[in-house]
Length: 560
Image (cartoon, rainbow, N blue to C red):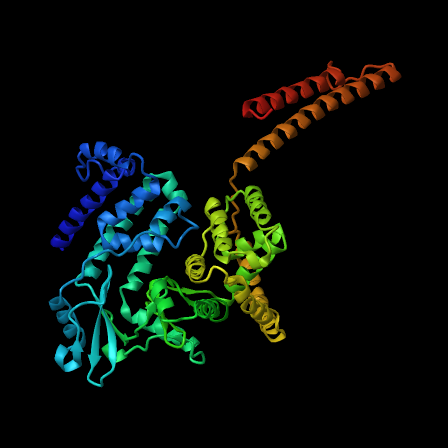
């Protein structure tokens, strides 16, 4: 426990120093960490010099790269959130690469044998000592089973989970401090963002989750011979290692090799786009990071998807909301676009709806003269994120993964075949989605679901009314409305009512005295009471006393 605390303090100092060196010392000051971690003042001068001429996004990228694998992965995950991170920073985050040296074969051997509880020789006929690829979380080795089948084995780096947990705990604590001390950190929900990124990274540390993702996507293409997903060997798969079918092919970013091998680039591009849109619009479960290195071309113009650490999910409702948003944009219907954005995300209570509508109008005008066939779906969704960011609308993580996926695929296809029309390929999937949406069976099921929901509400209503009546009968209902506008209104109302009372008393005095005077004049007598005082004099004295008392009370309350 003490060792863990010492490690956390040492790592916290490294992180804070890195903040300062890259020109973010003001954050260290605002969070009150200067004295706590004894930050040398010379670091501030160094940070000012090193950050001169660099953009904020560039400094963020350099900061993350300096702090190593955990922070690089955090930056890569953050690059999928253009709804909460400014575009200039996103532009730099997408440049982050896992540039880490491989770990030793002795460590690989120790991890594999511990995970499988057996020796390497007993499990595999052959195991390559040199890795095929190395990344921040793990590295891949080729091996051969005793059955003769060739496999690829991804092995997690030693102690990487502990290291990343330490970094995440520190960052979440820093986010908590920032949330408590810095107003903009609260406004942009830095604490919640850090928790979400931490959860995503923890999922990537469990290779069994990646294996299940792979199988689920493989099931989508059982009837499609043009798409291949590596088979998982579950008997050799654990949380720290994953064993899958070894696939040899050419990566889609190796254009020269593709041409030399005689591949029809247009056919490959169409197959990739069809596969991605089937995942997104039909199945609602899709590859979240389909960059060219994760897609291979195989003989027969078959494509293979690799690496399912990042996955996106879209519910049927979310797919419908997304379709409604795009349709409303094309129909130039501002109200429907606003409704689509509202349905897709969590809108803050204090959102400036007038300004949001104005931003949506600008967005609608941007696409007003663009033919549907020339639209970029990735850029359209990204424009949605821009509006969401400006108005602090929280969009589901999966929707932001979708945006990155579409942009990535459009980039891949643009390099493969610039003439390939992605929207045209997507159109049949969109029509199928709309058919399913308005299919009588689906509409009936949705209506029946709503009927059941309302039925439950009506069923519970008598019980709720009875409980409310019981509470009211006991006098336990207390309504407390506090609002500056309400308080101001009540004060004005008091002033008006007091002025009316004052006027009524004056009118009453005048009316009464006038009546008495007229009455006595007509009779020619002066009315007497039981004493020598006249009724006029006595009545006038009483009224004057009441008037003065009321006037004193009103002025004393300050509500005249």
